[in-house]
Image 1 (cartoon, rainbow, N blue to C red):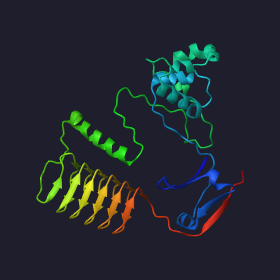
Image 2: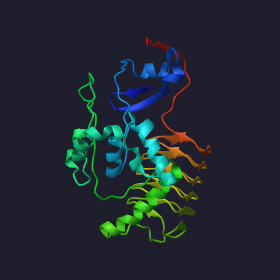
Image 3: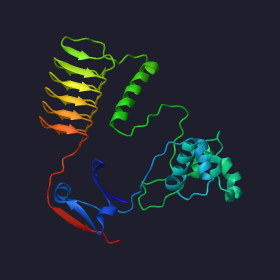
Image 4: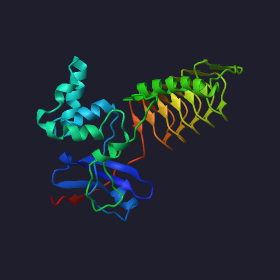
Length: 287
């Protein structure tokens, strides 16, 4: 279990604390309570998960003897697929009585009856629902686990745009004193300064990059401002972020509407909303 602090007006998560680390008390910083004086504490939230799974694997999971899909059945499926073992062995022999009925609801060619498999969740909050699903016939899916895989997914996705829309979004113009490789994608309304080098990078709309910058293998979302002399590699800049002059950034993420001061060096960091040091209040956990 985890404790989430959420801004109700924007639904933004402000902080996350593991219950195991909180012991008897839940610590809250003074600056959070000062910024959000009207605070409510709830314990009826649902730990939700999203799984991308083949329909055939779902049929086997339903007819197995495991009581937990994420903790028992899914790890066993992954282990069997990695070692080349058959997933059919997971089907419980004690499930033969209900197997025929469930096969009707989970036939590989019948996706309309998946709603019968949804497990209702009783909760005081009427907005919470359980057992949702979405069936996708054919689509392109990228597995993203870290910054480098996110960058690679963006490059692969951009290469697919031409096949779907016949629109060439690569940067072909060769402006004087600007070095941009053909593999780059640059959105409309960009301003790129002199003696700037951009390689294997995706740049969103209305981005400004000043003089003498070096940007390699990065993603810049819309309305990003990069000042003079910045060096960036293997990093992501979210929308409306600003990078101060002469910063050196590697393997990092700068979140939405954040500003990095001049001359900073970042490596493997995430810059999010500032959390100033302050006194800590204690909230008792009555459980």
